[in-house]
Image (tube, rainbow, N blue to C red):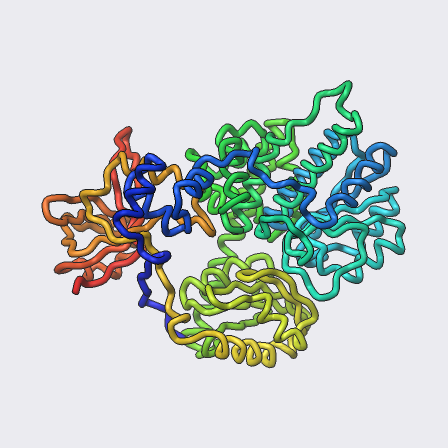
Length: 573
């Protein structure tokens, strides 16, 4: 299998006319660059633009629109008022870690008796842990509250009932045909749920539960003689999990992350401050969460115990937070080494061993650590643009992590191949599974059959969406300031990208062996460019070419200049 080298350039949507852009510019007071980017995101009226740019926390929907919310809140109120123990059960990724911290911190502020459990990836696997439920019941808990997991836990739901635990499930993963027994299931994907935002993260669902619980407690006079907890202070946790779980940063999620990133920037929480310090984060944005903070929190669950992440986020001592953050940073370096070894082994099997299907990749190996195969699967998707599943084998059993591409719904594909699986769960672009080693080859063949049926030749060529063609003269510090208003950027709200044609390169140099720095000229205008990891494409800068890029500002030695971050190059025609 060969890496994909050709990419399609495509506008994000139907290209707007001059009048349509002019209306957005006049009505919203933004530059043509920002108006074009808004149009590509489906924001095509002044009214929609005002909602996108200005919507505040008051615009959040009623949490009681989530099915199961009323019953779940009623039981939590009874537990708080009756002094009953509540056992929070999270997941071992950033979404589950931040969601667990949010529930524990907020419930304790409401006066609840709370403990929490995060499963061990290597020992417990994904989802609700039967052992954890037994321990919670033995410790006197009467309510089990999940976050970011549980919607597929049929056996565990039955066990909770047998143990006398009232199970409240909060989750955001796709809903299976058979739901577990539970006192309440709160999941925006439930078909009967009228909640308008289906793409919440797990911590997002937990946040709305706490909003509903606080409202009910307020109505019952719980805060008559005590200060009412300010849930806005928890939005840093919501932003962490929402961004790290790569859910769309649109609508409700965009509102939550905008305000959450402001809190993360202030770093009032000792654990966040310590994490920013070890990750050397200076500017707080979605990229800093996704590539700096998130991986360090994730490293605990991948290699050791994700409860360390919850401990860090709940820690009030700066000294202790620093110790935990330092340990997580060390685990992250170990994770990076394991990841690189696994990636090289997988590439060798695909490019030298000839493995992999026609339209998908399924690889299993006893050398692989289950804590890093999800990250490596993402790297392989970037390299080959195929739905990819990596499976870590041990004693004849496999744990797999899957990542997908646009046009291939991973969860639905796994449903079609479920006869070969011991279990699975997830959503459109990411999933996890368990499988017997002897079933891997049959599963791989079945999955490739599904992929061949769904994916055409064009689907297997990566698409680079852009927000339109522009001239270099349109890119100024002022117009880039308008683009910043569209942040935070991430899934569903990507960083604006544009195309400029008929360029020529000057002052070309190689930076750090892998990167290119050069200046592009178009007519009488020129701008500096950086092309990360593109040193092998040096010859493509000869003659006249077109560029697809992200425009931005580069700060260096107290000087701020416009810079184009290159995504792709092609000859002008």
